[in-house]
Length: 375
Figure 1 (spheres, rainbow, N blue to C red):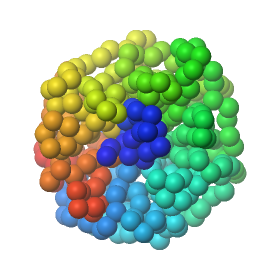
Figure 2 (tube, rainbow, N blue to C red; figure 1 turned 90 degrees about the horizontal axis):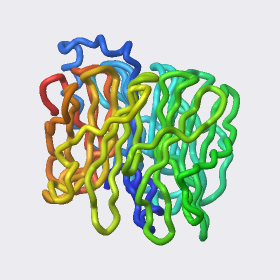
Figure 3 (cartoon, helix red, strand yellow; figure 1 turned 30 degrees about the vertical axis):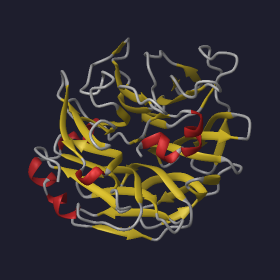
Figure 4 (tube, helix red, strand yellow; figure 1 turned 90 degrees about the vertical axis):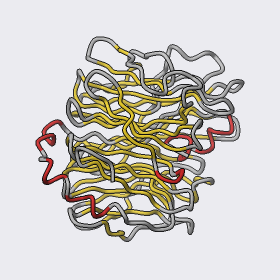
């Protein structure tokens, strides 16, 4: 399965809204050339037992993919411009990865197995090696999203779940330690509703967005929560209709979100765009229930014309899809091979993007966009 429902599995028992890990590259990366971006195609055949839940890229020569193995170990793969290679990593599950440079990356998830989280997990890359960094948490908590702004500024979000409640989890890195931040009150919540957080993205220290599902005890997750950090405080942001469970921030006037009401009766895929003043809701090939009911989406963006969404299509043998924003409409470009599923997408330019996930046989899946086709 894709995104939030795959990684934040315990919500599914109450009717999860799916979302996904997302990584945003800065607009300054959009200058990559098509000839340079074509090189990674040779690395897409890398396959090991396990699943990939997230991917981040800073250039055509540097990318990270993270996930977990069937043996209960985290899985970290690195792209060096020529090939993918596995990195040493500890036990646990990794759900998301973000990088601000080739020497600063964070991967987050949870201790324990994917289905029995034993507390949040954070790993940091310093340009030479990955190391585990202490992070406050308790069993039943997991992290689903991370944003790396600089060496001394990062955000991680996720879920705190007990036998009776599900609430949001927010943590901040100040260059020395991770600290818990109290999630803000959300006015739109009914008295019996709470919310979790599944994705976070930032374009600067004063422009951070995080989104996640509403949790209603009776109906499960049927809507979304949208929060904005202005450099001083978290506040409830303008909320478009429908679930908002994945987010990517390119700038203060360029934010994308997406989500899908799933559970027992999968619904349409929602996509929305914030231009700094208002939301618009461009339709996509899966906007209408029954027209390939979507199971979840992941959205990434680096520059105008370089926005991608990946999701799961329940009406065609559960095949995952990739669609691209052309500047005026969503265009379906590809389906995953052999009923595979996508869980994350990263892009640095219109001619360099990665999509990762897992195959039906339980192997990792990596695909690359070179500006004209996925391979």
